[in-house]
Image (cartoon, one colour):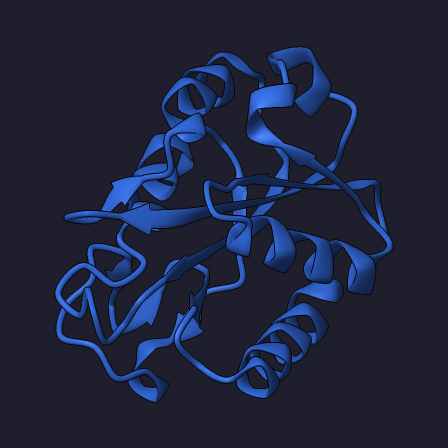
Length: 164
């Protein structure tokens, strides 16, 4: 596996927790997006980017500047996977929608996107992060039991490992 960095933005600590779980399974480094500059991205072949979703599908606060950092980096040829966390019950019409913000910012930058997830195994009403019936990355429902979350993370990591 090539050198991998897991990057997250987290307000309450949930997304940070999931980022650390993913990084541990991949033996990867993990950093908060607020601590990363554009040059840092060049040190890695693979990036796993995660955000929580707020309000009406908005990014976590650190990602607003983080997206500008990401856009200024040379991402061409990098393998990128996304993950997001949200509340499918409380915010069913914008579930994990912030992932779409990151996806839209990088999809045309010459990157290799991996890790989409079939959306049919989730209970939600709508999400900007669903393209052709799949989430653009791993969607994590913060209201699910921890065992379900661990199972989703483990399965997703095993699926993306071969591409990293």
